[in-house]
Structure formats: C-alpha cells, structure tokens
Length: 222
Image (cartoon, rainbow, N blue to C red):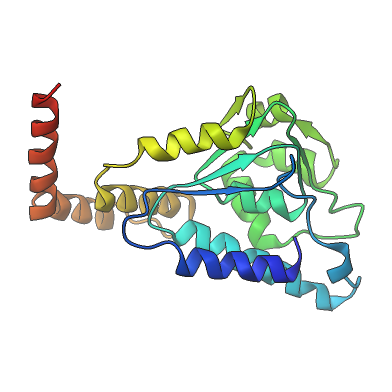
C-alpha cells in the first residue's frame, strides 16, 4: 500500500460509488490482498504519520459508505491492510489467507485511533496477539478471532461477488441506516433515543410503504 495507491483508493470510494451501487468489494491481485505499507514510503521519522493519515482517510471512507463493503482476502493481509480490512462490513478469506501486523518489529506504537477501532471490534486479546506478540494468524485463527467473517475454499472474490449480488434489491435507506447504527454503537456517545426516532420516521415513510408493496408483489409471484 503506497501513498499513491491509498490516495487513488480514497478517490475511487468517493467518485465511483453512486446511485445504483448495491455493494463494494475491495480485493487485491495475484493471490495477495496486500503486503502492507510500501516501505519505500516510510522514513522511520515523524513524516511516517502521512501513511497513518492516508490509511485513516480510506477507512473513514469505507465506514461512511451507505452500502455494504466486502473485503475479499486471498494470501497475505499485512500491516495497515488488516486495519483497512477490519473497516469493511464483511470480510471473506480464502484458506491461504495470512494476517500479520509487524508494528512492534517496525518500532511502532500503532495508530491509536485504529487500535481503539480494532479493540472495540475484536476485543483486547486478538489485538494483543497481533500488535504486541506479532502473531501470524492463518484463515482459521482469524475466523476464531473475529478478524474475518467467513473462510471459503477457493478464490474469495467469487464468494464476495455472490454476497454483493444478493444484496441487490434491498431497500437502500434501511441498509444505510442499519450500517450507520452498527457503526454508532461501536463509537462513544451512542444515543438510543436518536435511533428510535429515526426508526419511527422510516416506518411511516412513503419509501418504506413502497418497499413493502414491492415485496408483497414479489412474494406473490413465487
């Protein structure tokens, strides 16, 4: 993950995800999700905050997208790529996937904002194993730790594509609101009353009534 690649990924998440998008899949190429940060972009100085900021910008874009984001992970998923994958809503790994964050080896206190997000999602034990012990986790261990949602035999992209296609036809406002709710629960300042008000507003919206009518017609054809 070079600074240039991260910038382009951030731009793509902003410009190419528009109306009619049911889901987004993020994957690598040539049997690898990512080898982590491009060492040519690291200096071993305070300037390396630029890499943290670039990863943070991409993860923020993923979390803010109104549709599901699926990570299709084959082979190595290293360093900041683990952070990026964990920001996705669903993570599918092939059996050859490997997860490793060599922060201690590189002399890093990993980005505290990322560590907070990781610990809320995975719990302290999994984060300790990755960041302090520097464990390499295979796909099965990553599944047990909650790093991935499922492990598949074969290429992960095909499974991710099947899931993405299955979401087509879902009522987008409900998808978006539910994703926002799940993110809000993980963040400080969660206000149940705010979400109950939104729920009631959506229950009586014309769009929701139209969605119910469409579903009734669909079931009537089955």
